[in-house]
Image (tube, rainbow, N blue to C red):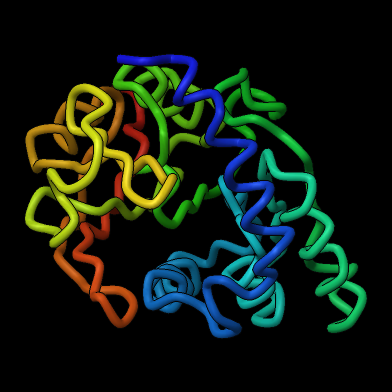
Length: 221
C-alpha cells in the first residue's frame, strides 16, 4: 500500500473544497436524518462529527439543537463550516476543530455521548488507520455511548474501478475510497456491540453504503 498516496489525499480534498464549496449539495445526508432520530430517542444532545467535510450534516444537527463539534483536516472545509455557523447563527450549537483523525483524538476518556461520521471510514485510511481510529472512538465514548458511521461497500458500482491502492482501496478521479465488506465491519467491533447494520443509497449515482450503529460495551454486562 502506497502510504505517500494516502497522505496526499488531504491536498486533493483541500483543492476540491476550495473550488467546489457545495460539492455535496446543500441539504443534509440521509444518514444524518437517521442519526438524528437515534440521538433524540436516546436523549443525546452533544456529539462529535469526525470528517465533517463542508458541514452539511453538522449544521443540520446544530439546527436541531444538538451541540456538535465538527472535526476535519481541511482548512478550506473548516472555513466553509465557520461561514455557515455565522450565516445561520449557530455559534451556540456548533464549533469546529482543524484535526487529522489519524492522530490521538483531542478528548478525554469516557467523555463523549456519541460520534458520527458519514463516509469517513471509507476515505484513504489503511486497515491500521481504521483500527486506531476505532480504538480512539472507543476510548473517548462514555460507556453505552454510540458510534454511528457509514461506508461504501463492496457492492457499490465503483468497487474495483480505478487504480488499486492495496486491500480494498481504489483511486478514481483522484479520490481514494476504502470499500467495506460485512467482515470488515465486524472486525471493528472490539469493545462495541453492533445494534444496526443496514444498506442504503446516497446521491444520484447512487453510492451503495452501510449504515452502522455500534454501542460501547458497559463493563460487567
